[in-house]
Length: 180
Image (cartoon, rainbow, N blue to C red; front, side):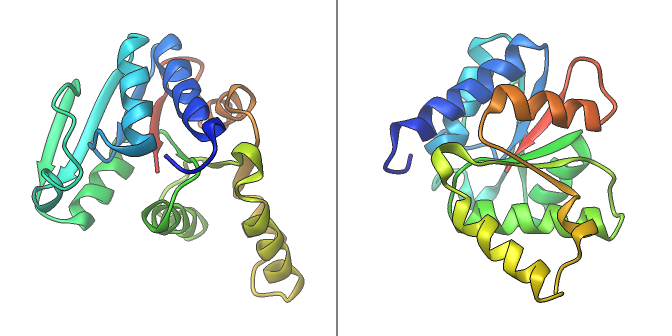
């Protein structure tokens, strides 16, 4: 859950927003941590939840059996492929190595035009301030272009960032969000 209560609140807000807007959450299928909170909040608000979890992680991540759809796949690559195919937009909440890996992968796929879906970073309580400073250095040192930076949307509030992602995806309602 992280150290700050704002992280858990943000996860609840994301799930409530998705559910209240008739949306669908596509996520990693676990019931632990912030991803589990987003999933539960989405369900409680009337949204659909699609979980995608590798066999090897069913026990480790405690698969959320209450998902509207739960897909148990063979590998992490299968998981990420299915989540990417099923989502209309991607959103990273505060998280660890898995969150960062998936965030950078969907951002990379976006700049390579493997997809044209918006990618967002929810900077709750300044969690990603250090990453933003680092990315500014990467741009300054010309290892990353301003065009590439503009492929992601960063916001501190889910009620502002989520509508931006949905608009960028060309949707008016019923978003399918991949929480990474």
